[in-house]
Image 1 (tube, one colour):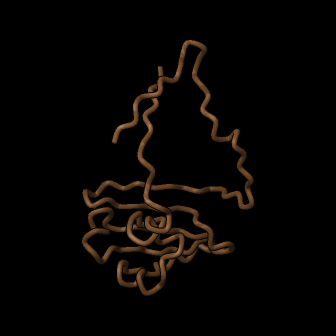
Image 2 (spheres, rainbow, N blue to C red):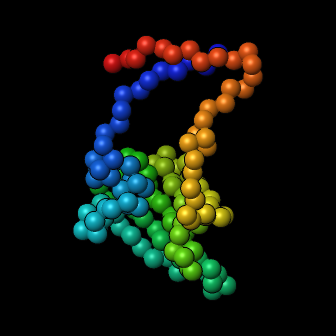
Amino acid sequence: MIRVVELPLPAPFDKLISEDYFLISLTFGLKADKAKKRFKLSYVPPAQSDKWYVYLKIEPKIPDDRADFAETRLVLSRTTFLPRQVSFQQPNGNEITWDFPRLVTGAAPRPADFEVKLPGDDWRFIRMRKRE
């Protein structure tokens, strides 16, 4: 049995960009002046043998961002400037790393790609009442 609970809709995307979600705001439309106020961005020279990547270090300046992460390392492909790796160091010292060994640009996802398939014939969805 899978219980489905409808959640309230999130804030409009443009509001998320301006205030919350560090990675989204940095990636999608955070203006340079706001980025400079919120983050210290530094170029990190690669090892002499590394000719493939560009390394950036991002540190939070304001308390709200420091509560989310202590430091981020963004690794970009030198040829495309697309992300190769993103590492977050959380305030407690834990590190989360996303690795993107291959990015597909121009992908065309279909609605079927997002369909939920039940694990077996004896499984079913139960819709729960919406919580306010």
